[in-house]
Amino acid sequence: MLETLEHMQIPVRDLNRAVQWYTEHLGFRLGHKDGHRIAFLHLADGPMLMLWETKDETTANFSVNGTDFPVLLYRTRRIRELHDLLVRLGAPIQLYLDEGFGWVLKFYDPDGNLWGVIQHKE
Image (cartoon, rainbow, N blue to C red; front, side, top):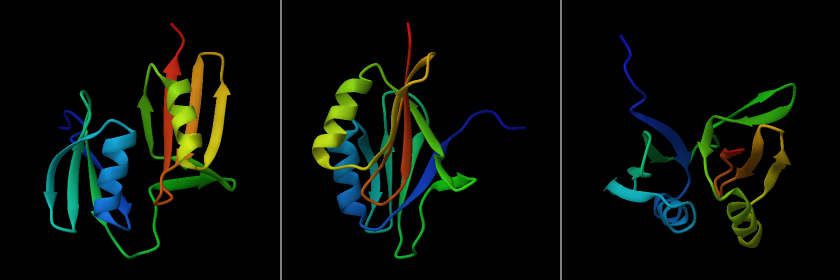
């Protein structure tokens, strides 16, 4: 039966641009890249993130009653710093809110994928 989550896959329009954006701004490390087709990115912990270059109009999001939700939700201890960086970069912010149990940030990457980030209260 299932044991662990190996990696997640998301679509991007320009693989080189996406790899650069994720590594420079979100802290990912490039593990492997196969031309203009796929790239595997890593954080210090957790499953790999696989980027697929595609010309299709698609994103890694879903909606409930017309509201977009992220497929990916990451954890951080530096949510305010991340929020401020994303604002400076011009990334669309969907939500930045203290939910009581912690701060939640939802933003769109340059390819329209919605990301979720949480900083739990300690």
